[in-house]
Amino acid sequence: MARNAARRRLTRSVLALVTSYVVILTAVAVFFRQGGHVGALAYAVAVLPALPIVGMVLVFSRYLAEESDEYLRMKFNRQVLIATGLMLTVATIWGFLERFGLVSHVDASWAGFLWVFGFGVGRVVNRLKFGEDGCC
Amino acid sequence: MENRLRVLRAERSWSQQDLAERIEVSRQSVNAIETGKYDPSLPLAFRIAELFDLPIEEIFVSPSRRSSKAI
Image (cartoon, rainbow over all chains, first blue to last red; front, side):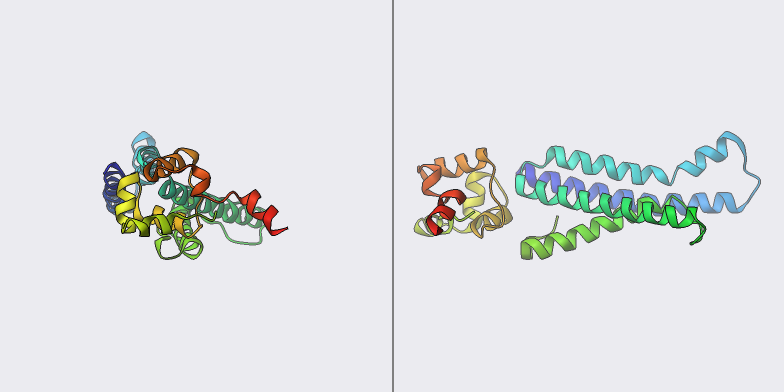
């Protein structure tokens, strides 16, 4: 059934993106540890770890377009909303605390990580609301 | 939304998976609809009604009708 194909494709893509995130982040960290990198190349390399996170957004969007089961789609939408809401809430609160010198600086690159974490929180919330079948 | 899906399914000796395959959704969807945790869309409700060859209102209990009876 197409539904299962969409879910399998989602799982495969997420695994590939998580793996590539770890590999790319490690490689880029090693690259910058050597020092002396400036100019366009430095910018291009620094942006590379963001690509798997951007890819995750695209993969989620594709899944929502492909998933024919409305119930599974609704639960996945809830997860996305919870993840986005959590990320925006934490980032906004932290941003103002930081702006008024009450907390230390945190790199904005953590937003993507927080969003993925929020997706896990959304899964737990779904499980609590819908029971054993609460997973995405 | 209250419904008679479980009863109708039992009358035909279908499992949740059997029903899910017939209306082309996941077993989780059937379970969520049967237990009233999820209200199906109108197209899905029509698919279910057509499968059982019954009007929608003989499968799903209208929430407004149910609340007016309670009053």
